[in-house]
Amino acid sequence: MANPNRLVILGPPGSGKGTQAKLLAKNHGLVHISTGDLLRQNILKQTELGKQAEAVIAQGGLVRTRLIFEMLLDLYEEEKDYVDQFILDGFPRSVKQAEGLSNFLDQKGKPLTRVVQLMLDDEAIVERLVNRRTCPKCGRSYHLISAPPKTPGVCDDDGAKLNWRKDDKEKVIRRRLKTYHEETAPVVEFYQNKGLVVEIDGSQTLEEIQSRISSLLGFCKA
Ligand code: AP5
Ligand code: MG
Image (cartoon, rainbow, N blue to C red; front, top):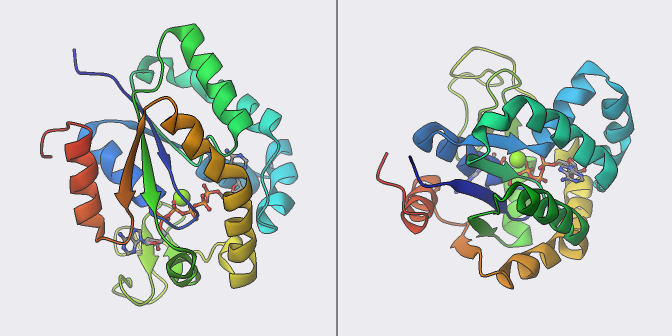
């Protein structure tokens, strides 16, 4: 049986968590669980959770922890089989969430195996996010300057019209960064104290980062 990979990818908004988690999922068969993506799906469907989350996300704050846990527990009921091969992206986002996750996984006898911390400075993040466009169908991310789609506004892979996330406006990006430094940065220390963190420079190319993560986690080359 393959070694368990119960992973968290941490980092500020725009540091590349989603990009790297998707590649790890594709290359190594992990289940990618992004709380941001799940919340956006709820907003699109205008579920009760989506309605509650929409304004909070648009302002760059954090959705209430109780709602996040309810959403993840629903998913866990469907995804139980994958409990040894997952990567959590965008969760946990506060020490309270990290403690809740630890309690849950400890009860199952399946603690986290590693936490990947992507590091990138605030100005690089603002530049990345104001230029980000994403495909609503396949989730692929583009950068208008460094990685534009072949046809402006259209996904190369499936022809869908690209989205500009409402929270990718500079004013909201700066609020998200403030929330990150106040609420999420202490989560890194929480996991450092458990000896789980590997730090990666998020300013390298995405291939360099993927290869570094893969070798630190002991994955064979994909
Ligand atoms: P979420 O969707 O998780 O947003 P985020 O953490 O702000 O991060 P992003 O998705 O914006 O960036 P990313 O790190 O995934 O970077 P990406 O790979 O896209 O959360 C959104 C909101 O939902 C939160 O603000 C909060 O309100 C709420 N929420 C979510 N989870 C919650 C929770 N647990 N509790 C409470 N509230 C919660 O890359 C960014 C760009 O850079 C892309 O254009 C990409 O193509 C480009 N790029 C990536 N890597 C590189 C590279 N190496 N070089 C150059 N460009 C790159
Ligand atoms: Mg993301």
